[in-house]
Length: 161
Image 1 (cartoon, one colour):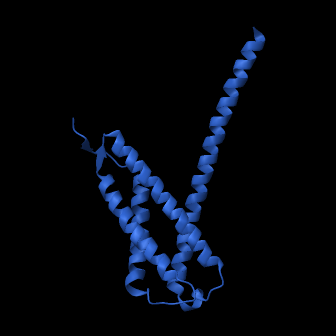
Image 2: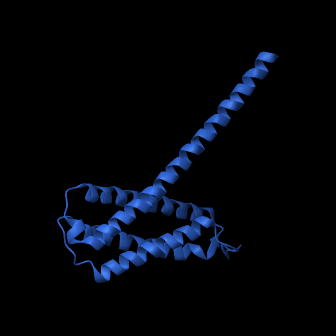
């Protein structure tokens, strides 16, 4: 049995992951090469490094999983685990970015490129996490309402007998 086969087409989420990674990896790479020397009273360079190197690892993962389709359930489970790990990593980066953004700093005038990247990163990822949170809440409410509806129908049948 062959464990790997070519994918017929990409899912929308795979395309979104690819372009998200491409855009933020390109932006952080440009900042790494041209603007990382900008200094302010916050360590925005560390934030840029964390984004850049994290996205290099994530980009490698995307290239490994973009073309082939794996039939082995253990491999698919491992890749789902890596998806969750990356989401947790981005969530921690978002928290760290918010900490940098909300503290007193002079970065807007001393390191404007790094500060702008921080703002854009927080805005885009904040919106993504809000959408995912709302989707999760609606999924839970949908499951709960179906469970209550089936329970109520069973109760009505019991009372009518």
